[in-house]
Image (cartoon, rainbow over the protein chains, first blue to last red):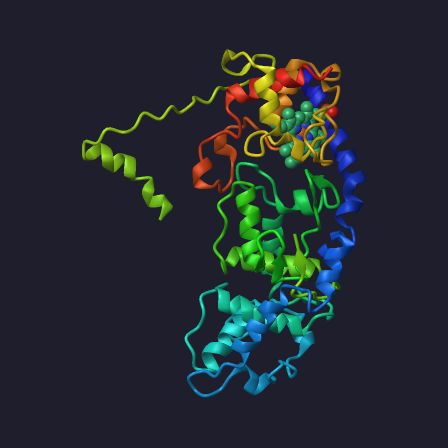
Length: 259
Length: 151
């Protein structure tokens, strides 16, 4: 009896502290940029110092490479991608009415590659597709992320949100545990960011490589000893929808420089 | 691919191969009384010196990733959880054991891993960790013994 009372008191205490903690979760989005040191920010901002620009150049070459039917991406979108609509880029992922499913930017690029250039489509998240994605998204640098989740994409967004709040792996934590409840705090030597996606694909100083969002999530899953979902899987795509929408209003920084 | 490997031991048995003797630790059940686990796991005796290594080790306790501790020789201490300096003057042995075994018994929302939760409760665990507790029972007892020195 006494034990039950104790438990009840504990639960009440938790509920109360939970509500007090709530404003933290509704916090405004902050780009990972805000958590960088000054010198790393300068590196990102300087197009000659930003190591991610190598990937942009590589993507640009693919963008201008002629496909089986003699056309390239540049045929429609300009050699520098200058005819791309940067506002549209900032909308991704979007719901594709024809395919009746959400389309990430990579899926859209891959569809053009196959249909407009008459080429063999890429495997999701392969090196060349990530290079193309980096180039295309970098065209929209400075544009505000603006994912519309009011339409038919809503159930996918909801599913992504659910995954975001689900505990995984032997460490048994959710994405929200680090990036919502504890953003700004120190995990040993590292500061936890909000885990925003506005800089992807991003250059990682630690690995010295460009990293797509799905690969970054794979790393997170492994770090909490969970079996990651596949690159390009429905789960990762749903998470991408939720994550991008969660950062609505942040400026696109591709290729961002991160630790 | 990995899933198929699960059949390998069975297959080897069928073919008459001897399996290497792998010491799989039994999972010791534990019982919570008044927000404490008063019996040492498996009746094991902890060692504070070993426990200190476990709390530092990034692949084992890694408690420093979230907690500040009186271990000045380590450069980086986390700020996710409270400092554990003087923790033994606030919590007794049984209370400390429960917090290490499964902090979720106290705070279901916590970020702190349950170091000796029943592995059946985990979701999508990487193959190499599947069916295993985060720390062994001995490591848990070692960590409890170490924390008891932080008066």
